[in-house]
Image 1 (cartoon, rainbow, N blue to C red):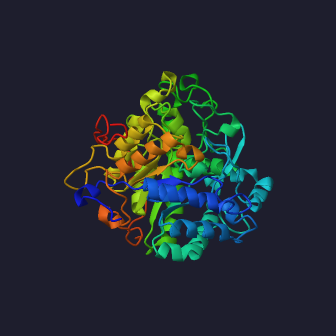
Image 2: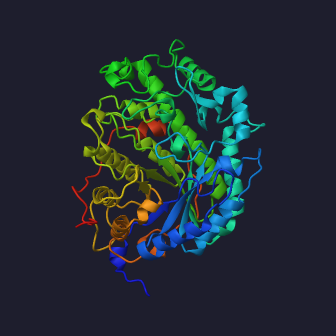
Image 3: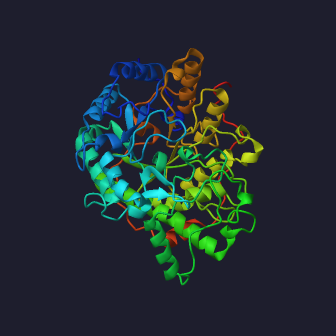
Length: 498
């Protein structure tokens, strides 16, 4: 049957991807249940019209046997199945542990031989003030230290991505793999592990700074001395995971965070994170340059305490975002250097979803982050943060995908590049849920039929270009100047229940 669409309306089309189960390739590197997955994906493709899938490609699985011993067999089989069904693939380079975060139902640690290094040198991990280690992801402090059988952490990531490219070249060439999302921290997000449930963090706690490993401590002391303040030290007054901002010396009104020393620390802490992202995405850019793929990075939706003057939860995660300082545009500027896409989360949430004490403002946060990325001239993609099956969440997602609605005469002013639905499960296929999900996809597609040719809706993938300039501290400071957000409609013109 020929697809039926209006070419002008098609320019409002937002492709929909579905995230595969975390353990679709299990911890033993086995693609355990291809039959069930094929049945589910066929239904999603034929009945719902989805465009593709997103899948975690776990470092802890692929390089588990030892340094540079990569085994891509199970993933290759999985990707070939997806491609055969005519679905596109967003592949996440997952350099973090699975387990210990919201929604983690399987445990996939980082490779054992890397953890063996940590047994002798626990400072390779992010560390809080009390000395508790977080083993989800290697500390930024070891990015450029050759502690891993002679390689640095950045080289581990780079070699892994090179091996991925070599082994998946045919799938990239035929256009089956369209996005490479580069994991840059815990949960694959560019952030510090400031709110680990495994260490007792509970929503909406402020979280904790994670820079007390010996390598980051040394880096900070050198930076402070260079700035003429050798006496400055890492914060001692920033409280613990579940404190309220007002109970701490750091985040209370006129607290340390607004002092000269506090500002210096927060600038150092957030800049380390942005340059960490810049370096690893830079490696990815070198590896995939010239190929027809997009690069992407994920930023976490830290919506709680957004309405507190200190934005404490964002600050501990590494997002130096305040009323008079933009924490997200500098990240967008970094990505723009590498022609990257910013992938953001919590698209389904409304301000009213959480209790008043959480001071949560997901709607404003989404609006801010998307606006800043668009102002930097890059594309934005996104996903829901929690499992969502109802009209309220879907309508909010649709509003964020096209903040000013559908343009009947062509390309809308604002449109997200893509939406990834979290996540494939049996629950999605329950009768009422599936009916509503099909409507979500249809509305994302601006009421047009599925379109397999991305060029028709303005998403033709061009060969990846290399950066034309290096990111500087001045770039970050410039991008951090406050600027307003775009205006959003109050509700979507494409409701699933409208």
